[in-house]
Image 1: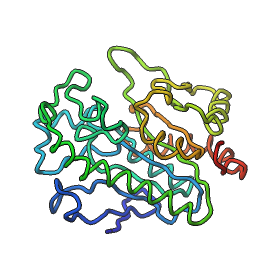
Image 2 (image 1 turned 45 degrees about the vertical axis):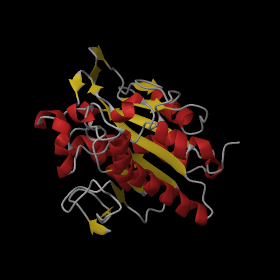
Image 3 (image 1 turned 180 degrees about the vertical axis):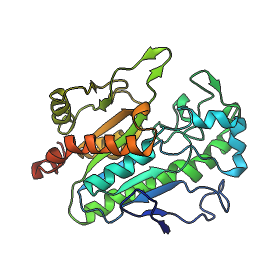
Image 4 (image 1 turned 120 degrees about the vertical axis):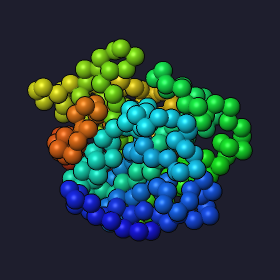
Length: 280
């Protein structure tokens, strides 16, 4: 892995080497995942499924114009910065996807129609129309699997140290979707495990001028919530999904501000040693 430290962030980001394991990636292409703050001391793992809008050269942006890559259909705008700043505040490691969700969505079951979506928010995705199983398998091998393997590796490293970690999935959402205005500044996604989410919601219900959504604008009970279901819920790990509105975090100052706001709500919750045990 190569290591870089970007201006504005406290810790280092590591990039895996591009090699024959990833058949759709070549020299100069973005990696399928990045890790950040690998030596973080908190018993918490942050994951960011939609932190990148990048495509390898060989996929030709799936036939999409450049302007589509600026839209929320290609990635969760601001989630990369938000995740890194939150990792800085919590001193937690993080795994961030390094590819556009339009190649294959890492937060979907692979048999879901939206895993290789042909239409997103009214925008046709030419390179996804008529994909055969071989083409899908190459994308899984090059992008989906390495990202999820990186998450598994981080969780196994906690396990080897005798730690039951909390897993927090960081997303951002567009402020208007299908002509519906979303009033929530922060949305919390959860299903069977309320240990983090309920205390977090209670905290922000006491904070003026912040609108918190309980399973809004998306629900943690929806089967599309693959990453948390697969890595955390199935193992009984304490977990929560976060959505922050994209207009709040679309620049570095906004991302830093809202990372601090999230951390203020999380730090006391995550400081409780009783949290770190499997839910049975």
